[in-house]
Image 1 (cartoon, rainbow, N blue to C red):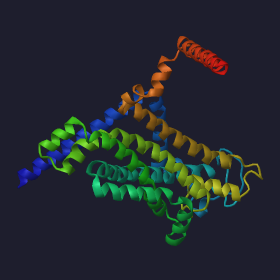
Image 2: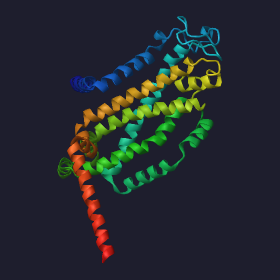
Image 3: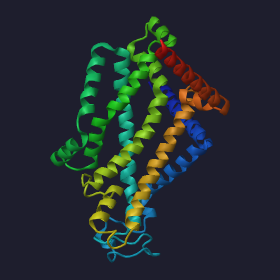
Image 4: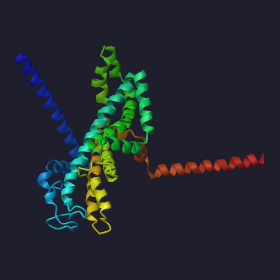
Length: 342
């Protein structure tokens, strides 16, 4: 028994090491790409700021005793000044707000990718009744007005960020499922999938071992892009007052700046700070997502029709196109004149 447990532990350890090595190689590929390097640097800074916020922030914005005079301008003690309404340090709020944006973006993006991938693979590979049920559900979810329903749900069940994540996942998995399903419909006719079916492999084995690796590049790339979109959506909901009132987020900072009259009193840094934070987080994840597309599927760019057009487009080609258009126009005019004469 002890020998078996030891072997199982060694096997699990080897798999974990293999996963970390794979992640390391993938990050190295992103680092070698100039665009990916910029995204990785910004994301690393954001993650470090979120994890070590109590050490980086000079004040605790949640602590009432650490608040200063209201409406202070930027200084060495308060790098971005203090709020007009509560006297909180804006720089500390900016650092602590990174936690909410990253947590909501990453958790929602990963959950959406997981749920959308499962639904898309089942619908595309199994087909039949499961495909019909999933796709009809997707069609219904796509026509539901999300914002009014979000307002109703948050008022009924509370405005916690767990509820906001649940709402994002509830309405956000449909797009991923449709994209994955379209790719699975192509992969299910591949030779290696047919060979696995002839060998007697079960559907779950084929979906996990053969179909899932074939769509993994699309899942990873869409996850990064989805995280960026969710961060913007969270900031928008917090700005509208639908976020957690007890937590500090960048969207809530913008809402407080508007309600506190930051522009009226000339405290533009109160608005610029969270705006830059939202921009950098979205920009970095968008960069990583686009670079992932090139790294994981380099044929996608080379096989694109638009890429081929711009690659082959030159002055000679344009001259030939316009010359052909002129010849067709001349022939059309001559044909029209001959028809009128007849």
